[in-house]
Length: 441
Image (cartoon, rainbow, N blue to C red; front, top):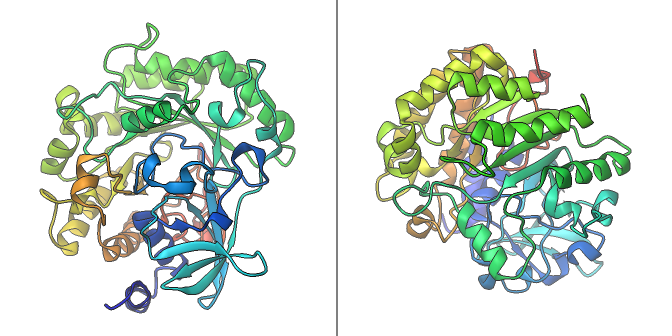
């Protein structure tokens, strides 16, 4: 293929059942996008909602390597519409890559567009600055720092522990830059609270609730790094759970409560449920046994793959299978030096994992791997996984859901092209609008 355009068009022709919007979205997520200065935000002083760096960097360069985009943040997300491919409304999480063949820039009339190989391929919309971002907490902290929203305002992302206790080369997941992201923001002098105080979280949520008059925010996610010991004297279930308890007591039923944590023993999972959490995300990261052991050494050492999977299945007894939604990092299956060398092998392995969980009524979801350069796998694989892998994964995901009669997982907003808001992969864009389900069902 002589250009990225030719590659994308070839895949759209070969996989006509995958929405064309998802093909572009996956390519932007896996490879990033460049921003002309005309497309950057004015940070928290402007009219555009800026990128919050809510847990990982999701960039293809460190802050010093991003140029003006490190000083004037790009938007949190972009929306693609129209253009020569007649794209339906598609929400895409921003992953900055100054070397990307995709570029967002304003034309002579000041209208933003997405350009590929120099050709305008879509109109670009950017999220307006929400009213709740214009207000600060009583201690001066911004709402964006304490309780940023993503997925076009659908999800409040509460990273209440900004580092991970899996630390160093022998424990950190090999694709994860949570600890580096913490370090780079602190080095840049940006506010980046390590452990968020529960009262600060509640105050930020009060501001969101007060000014989100359209009730666009529908769910919150409690998350952060793994806890192998304690934080503030609490183990992992109690640490993340006590935020949920406080939120549910202050705002009963206002949001769908979700928690991303390790696969914990059943008694700990029950504590999450007792605290008011509705959806549990015990992420299994990568299916293949050898790759899990190599790429998730801390998780293998402290829990182990087989026990991790057993705990996921056990948690369905607590939450119900539909409300257990483990994530995997789509693409690391093909990461050198240990990953699969063909798309066929990688898809076969990942589909085996999908069938394992879906046969038990558990519907995983996935995040499209962004090869951040400070991670071992990012350094070794700056191009990420082939775009064909990501497109075929969408096909396999939908087929496996259909095989087991499952609908879209709850807590992710509406499914379907032109409707989905989940921004860090296209799995919701690739499903039918009829696949919708509500939490608790």
